[in-house]
Amino acid sequence: MDKRKDDNIIINEKDPNKNIDKETNKEELSTEDKIKEIEDKLTRAYAEMENQRRRYEKEKDDAFEYGGFAFAKETLNLLDNLDRSKISLENDEKLKNSNSLEKIFEHLDIIKKDMISIFKKNNIEKIETINRKLDPNFHQAMMEVEDDTKDPGTIVQEIQTGYMMKDRLLRPALVAVSKKLKKSEKKDEKIENNEENDKN
Image (cartoon, rainbow, N blue to C red; front, side):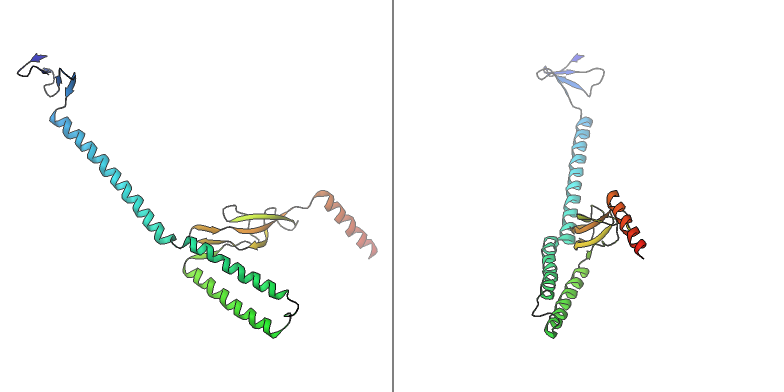
């Protein structure tokens, strides 16, 4: 190493671009090193800006695509209430088999069809259930029904309709699934069948 001009700077003879500051005992960066460091910082800053831009674009697209998600979810209650109203009217002894009841049902059906049509226009679709295999991503099993004619886990009854909004679940379908009969029950059933056959 060679000492020149500035007492605080020691010139590195092997690499004159890397000089050592005596006070800080650190190598001074050459111009090329400084440029590389600045380029590195710029590259990192640009990458961070790109990531933020992509996040913003995704959030903007999601807001556009699914902005009505909460509203749509709440609106499903209207469909449920229409169905409940229909069941309630069907069980009303005073209205049973009357012309008034038929007219009310016609109007309720028109309202329901219109609502389903509006849902379809906004990419809200009913989840298929009956005779499908239970899928926990779309269905929620509420009870099991003994049924030897179907594979275990097959949906045999829909308790509440589920809906999708594009590729997102608005709400799962509440369903009843099949399960195999217990062995003791099968034996009882066979005995009953044999007794009936003997009588015949």
